[in-house]
Every structure is written in C-alpha cells, then in structure tokens.
Length: 282
Ligand code: NDP
Image (cartoon, rainbow, N blue to C red; front, side, top):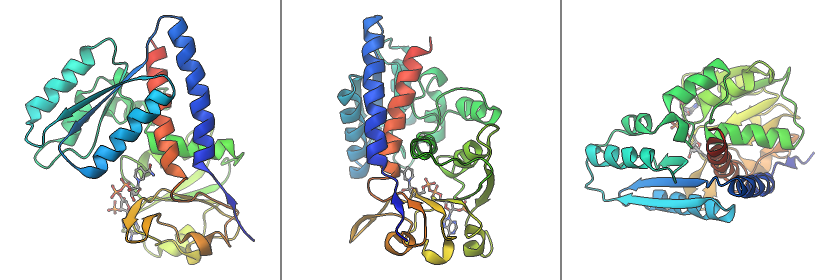
C-alpha cells in the first residue's frame, strides 16, 4: 500500500485563491486589509518566516507592514510598538514573531496585541474562545490541519485521534479542535511522559505528530490505514525533515502529509484566513 499524499501546498493554493477574492470584495466596500509583523533581533530563521508572511500577504492583495526592532530593544520598546500598531486603522491584523530574543517576554507581547487584531490566534482571550467553542481567530497550525483534512474529505467524527505534543502553539489547540462538538473525534493527547507511546499511537485513526524530533515516528507507531499528519519541522544536514519517517510510514498509512509541502504552507495560509476574517468582522 502507498499512502495518498496530503498536499498542504495544493490546499494552501486553494485557500489563497479564496482569500484573494475576499480581499478584493472588502476593497470594493472601502475596507483595506493590512497585516503588520513585528520582528525583534537578528535570528535568521525568524527573518525568513517574516519574509514569507509578507510575500503571502502581498500575493493575495493584503497590505503588509514590516516593523523591525534591534536585538537591543527593551520590553517597553516592544510593547510601545504593539500599542502603536493596535491604534493604526490600516493595521487590521498583527503578528509578533516569536520567540523574542532572550530577556524579552513572549507572553506579555502576545497579550498586548488587541484580541481583535490577533492574526496568530494566540491571545489568551482568543484561546479562551476556542475552549468555549466560540468563533474567533484560531491558532494557525492546527487550524490549517483541520482545513487540510476537510479538503481531502477525511471525516474525523467517531475516529480516534492521537495528538503527540501539548504546546499551546500546536498540540493543545489541535486536541481541542479535533474533539470539539460537531467535529467529534475522540482525542488522546500524548507527550514526553506518555508511557509506551508507540502502543498509544497505534490506536490512532488519525495521528498528529508535533514533537520536533526528526523521523521519530516510524512504522511501529502507525496502525495500518491511519491518516498521519506530520507537523515536525526539523532542520538537519539532510535539509528540512519532519517527525515522521516518511518512506516507511507511507507504506503503512492510508494518507500522509509530507515535510516540506504539508503543514507548513497551511500554517501560512491560516494566518491569511485569520487576517481577512479580522478585517471583515467589524
Ligand atoms: P514544543 O517544543 O513547544 O513542544 C513539543 C511537544 O512534544 C511537547 O509537548 C513535548 O512534551 C513533546 N515531546 C517532546 N519529546 C517527546 C517525546 N520523545 N515523546 C513524546 N512527546 C515528546 O514544540 P511545538 O509544539 O512548538 O512544535 C513541535 C514541532 O512542530 C516542531 O518541530 C516545530 O518546529 C514544528 N512546528 C511546525 C509548524 C509548521 O507550520 N509546520 C508550526 C509550529 C511548529 P512535554 O510537554 O512533555 O515536554
């Protein structure tokens, strides 16, 4: 058996086409959509990620506003820029690129962003809305995964989903989204203290690997016919690799998302979805 490839690249292209139309419709109604990013310091990976976000925004007609602060910026500097962006009418969504340089407080920065401009969907207010099942911007990675499953007609209702990883960025919101009323997966949330992880994972009809360990999930973790979503993004000497041993798992799974070209493009597309929704919601 060779698994179907779940192409985030393909789904992201479809999402971007829809967003391009929505942005054009908003413009006709005199509503400009603007996404600001705040980047602090010189981290090369963060520079690359921010560059992608601007390229994506511009490709769908969203105005992008690129603010940088030096590595020496203080917490007050960071919060001051966020306040200024909060008050700008042309900024309808905002992303603070994380992690901030050491010595600065990520959580305080995320909390300073107005929940109504929170393009990342990571403000505690919006995470609370997710917990309560209320609409709002959603954390981009798990929301992108839900879109990808939906696009490929993978129904999660009644299925057992195992989410490995419990970060506030990926694992926890992923488990909430899969298990919410109306989506109706039965969710097991696993982590580094989970005993006999392979046996737990073999219960999964849908396995989400979000750990950050290259190739950790080999075929012994996968039930034949399972759907496997690889969130891991690991930079190695062999290039960018996921958490899943792609070749051997794709002989066991029914469907699998690759790295690169799987979850990554969907995370980026979901940021645009949040941005356009925030701009249309007032
Ligand atoms: P974190 O480091 O915040 O969390 C990792 C999670 O994995 C933790 O909950 C940890 O458990 C768990 N874990 C670590 N080692 C093991 C193990 N041996 N067995 C079981 N569980 C383990 O990472 P993130 O959630 O932020 O990211 C996870 C991966 O996803 C990374 O590779 C990251 O680069 C990637 N990523 C990719 C994105 C994309 O768009 N493609 C977006 C965001 C992240 P514990 O809580 O017990 O410590």
